[in-house]
Length: 366
Ligand code: SAH
Ligand code: SF4
Image (tube, rainbow, N blue to C red):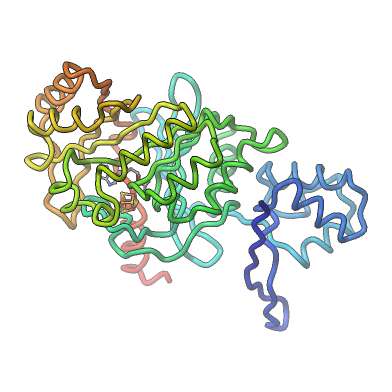
């Protein structure tokens, strides 16, 4: 599949014309483009490698003739991100970025260091339309989808800025990746391309709030990624209150889709469960959850819910979180409590963007 997107660019004299999003093209797409310009085939691989490496202008492509660089610059744009804010944790070196996109929109991204390497958490949309009650990303709805190239740019920027190689990616920043299906799939293909960033699909997690139609479509690709489901509730009563997506696809429909997905991919599924005090953290809730997950090869990630200013949700105390984990384990469900990285710069999904936007709006910068 070749995703062919254009955006309007201004040339001197205010003439507005569309430019091609060249960084979202796969090698096949770049080959067609090079071919259409009457260039030899070997240029395609050279160009593709440059585009995937994170260069921000055609001028950096030193082995491409100047005339071709100019021609490409006239026709195409290279998607980039600009770090507007950068917060570095003094505790563990986690770096959180607020990036500005070409149209002034803001997204978040996080770089985390683990024993096995560096992980980047990327955003897939500006905002989100799923409206989960505990999440800051959904507060203002969806502004727009990110292109595959804007997803890639979050990784190459972090790699270049910190002079590191990124080994893992989680699609767990702002946005619902399965609500931006084509671009997310194109991103997965590009980021794992051996001529590009070359991150193995086994090192990539895609997190969804439970878009069943997307899970079904994704199964057809049979990518060996980890599918992560933001479940957060053991029954429909609770899930309906916190996650509107549940009214379209309830827990049983979601878990059925997971089972079918697993049948095809044979991959273990990861369930995210944000513990909210008094809402989903009781002994009974753990029992209900264990029962629901029967028959699925899975792992549960327990996350102490991060308070968001706009709601009254609180995380349970440490003892209650451990008790919930022990209960699940005793019922045969594999569960871990997620380690919090960057606690001193803490801000989950969407909160940093919101803070930055408020600062900027307050200062009348934009
Ligand atoms: N839209 C996708 C991926 C992005 S959200 C999804 O929902 O899965 C990434 C994760 O952060 C999800 O598991 C989400 O439920 C969780 N999350 C969002 N706000 C949170 C909060 N305030 N506290 C804890 N986890 C939160
Ligand atoms: Fe969107 Fe995920 Fe936040 Fe829900 S948790 S609003 S799906 S980003």
